[in-house]
Length: 108
Image (tube, rainbow, N blue to C red; front, top):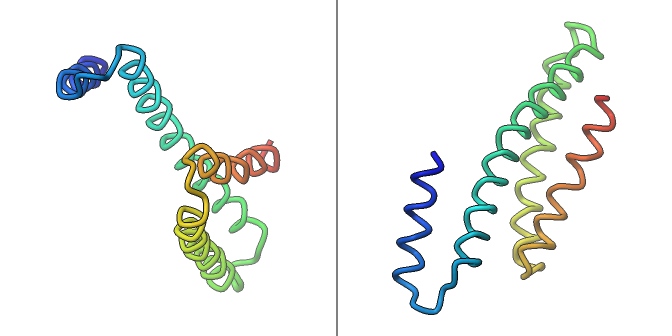
C-alpha cells in the first residue's frame, strides 16, 4: 500500500511544478491517518450499536435501533451543514473527531 500511495504523491508533485516534497509528505500523512481513522471509526460504531442494543429488552430493540440510525442520518445532514459553514478543513475534522473521543471515553 505504501508503494501505491508514494507513486500517487510523486505523480501529483510532477504534475504540479510548485509542489514540494513536504507537500507530498503531508498528502501521504493525511492519507495514512484517514485510513486509520476509517478503520477505527467503523469498530467504534459497531461497539456502540451493540452496547445500545444490550441496554434494552428484545421487545424495544427495534425502536431503539431505528432511533439510533435516525440520529446517524441527522448527523450526516449536520456534517453537510458544517462543511458549508466551516470552510477550513481542520475545523471540520475537529468537529468530526470530538464526538468519537467522547464515545471512546464512554465505552472505556
